[in-house]
Amino acid sequence: MNMTATPTIDRAASLPVDNASRLAIFDALHDSRGQDGLPVALTEKELFDRVIARLRVLVPRELHLAGDPQIYLHDKLIACAEDGLLSIGSLEGEAIIALAGKYPSVRY
Image 1 (cartoon, rainbow, N blue to C red):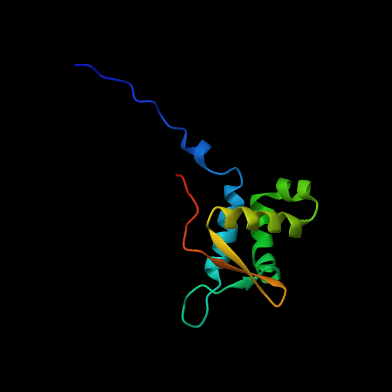
Image 2 (cartoon, rainbow, N blue to C red):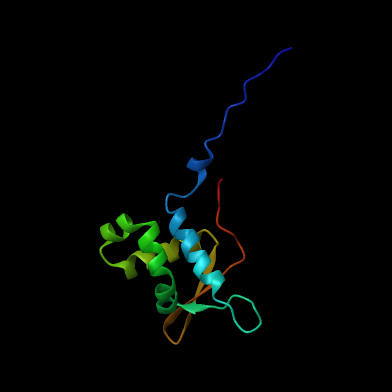
């Protein structure tokens, strides 16, 4: 019997380095529900108010190194939009953020 060793995949390495931030942003958007029970779009300020406490627990060092938590969040929103997790639009000059239908990666 010939048993060939299969290379193992380092699944943690396949996650984005900022995956904790992406999950926090996704959760905050997912938790914002309208009267119909569906997630609603939020302004960047509304999302900041909902997610900053989670980020301070999950990524305190990153926030500290970034200096300005609002700039840190904005950069993460751009990364999430580029990955297809959310969409960013504009209404009267203010950024509007909504889920795009893709889910962030989770490994157990």
